[in-house]
Image (cartoon, rainbow over all chains, first blue to last red; front, top):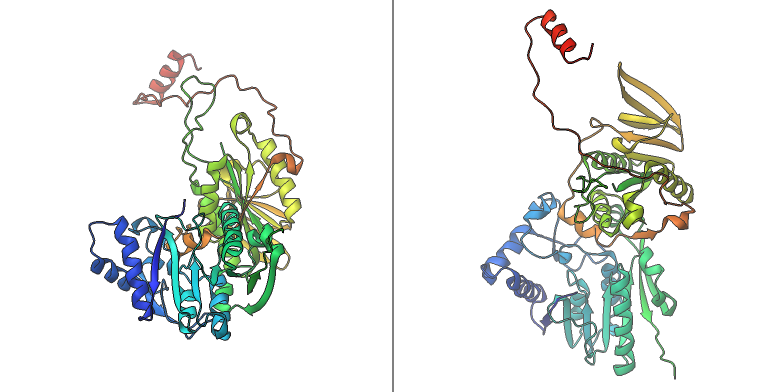
Length: 235
Length: 243
């Protein structure tokens, strides 16, 4: 199923920490290459971008049209699926919301689950979270495990697959009942999300219109919304 | 065979169709479907490409990729999504029903879907076309006002026709050169939706009207005989009993 790796941000330069984390992930798959080689590979094949998103104040290493792998045959990509090389629209809404409302992350322990490029985790750190973990594909599956005492869990663009959504939904309920964790979800209104049961239990917090370039690249998506999950277990 | 199609919505939807590589079973009762790699055939790729190009020209609003077949066809739908289709529909047909799935049932499925989706244009790969009065063997497709202008490859050369929408078009090899799916687009396709539909949901019965008696591969091509003169040719034909 989903393999996860845990990256930790503890007051260091978050971009470098993230790159180090990605190197750890890739090293599991490409034992021949050193962390140094992998880091350089990422640097050579991505570009730092900040404009053209909902959060121009955050710089991210992503695929852009000037990068080799924008047009290169996908078979030549030597690593697992690079979900992290795209700034997904749900994550953009979450990051924007956190930056607009610093009290949401300030002083809290935050988990960015399925972090992709890590923007929401970065936004949480920038607005004063005491501890931030950015989590994406990892050998030790966090979903389904005993939850830690997170104050806040962030989920951007995680409801595109029915099976994943169902597993997530159950695990989130456990987190809320065990630790009273606040759960925030960012989604651009994908059909798979709109049709899922969790949708009925969500309370809208904010809605952002996506920049034109993001709309163009994601037909049918025009806005991205942040939701709070109001799960109340039956007493 | 499995079938793949693109529905196009212009203000329009578009559908396109495909076939996989097929091999005959050793007992001659059908074709091999286990483990067949359900990759898109060239005609389907061309159909998808045309749909996506029309969308890029802003003549089309949404491109829907449709495929009929077992679970494995989702792979070809994902490829279409990675080439630029917006969402997919998987019409689940498996086992015996899939082996006996013929053009009649497929046409019914597509017709029912096209109506449900309010598709304005259906683009198919050439090999599965069984439509009349449509833009078959299209080597160029354009939209002018509310009509479709199609340049067709016919025996005598090229024919240009204008057809009203909704319309069906089949892609010829010369229609375009398909793009390959790039890595960023493959990643984006992973989060696009593929809906699952059963033929029964569309009111279509896929039980076969035909009983397959035998399936054979085409005969191996035999070596020919060279002759020097016309008289020799006539002599050979008489020998073979053909004249």
